Length: 319
Image (cartoon, rainbow, N blue to C red; front, side):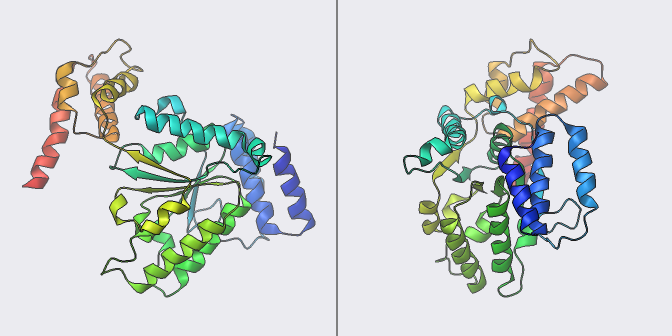
């Protein structure tokens, strides 16, 4: 069943004859129902919406013509995220503040909802955005940077305004992945004037934004970001390569579905210390596939061999 806010938004859009807001609200309802396991109902809602041809919206669509926002309804859970205790606790704080945002407003306070994620590739930044959306029963919208940034003067800033219009009209989690594409330091000598204007526009939009949506920017290179960005975000989370304890948990969690009693050896953990969360997860998937295809058990030796294969990629790159 749609929430009270969604129903009110739907009625208001109808009374205002606002087709764009009507469609985006229906999209939110479909995502909400899908999250609750009502997949058949969500599919029926989408089918009905696709028959509505009166809307001129270009930002949020169900079809493949969507040029800027990629919507999904993730089902990841916080318990599946293996990061440092500090990052884990701060994500819990973001979730708790969102769930109790009305209580905070009574005291003139607002919840954390503009978040910057920084760290090595494959350390859980994108997964974090999916988990926040899933835990809060919100749709996840990934901003397609290659569609947002164009070579034409002023066009990127116009598209950026459309993104923030959607952030205002449809409550969700909005992820700007590879954020340094627009957030690069304005003092960098080779930075073109157009991108400086885009960054200025982003700074204005994010500062003026007062929606209920959660805005997440993710980058692999914090040093490239303009210093003015940091005070616009409510929280900055730093992600690093997994510790030995986290590596242990990654192997156990990923392999538990196929091999519940598997325990990684110290040698396997030591071998994996330079790998990211995503790389270790991929190694576990490969090990499971090998075991299935060969009708065999997962062994320490096979996993170490897969780790060596991954490490060999980097040694060849260096050469």
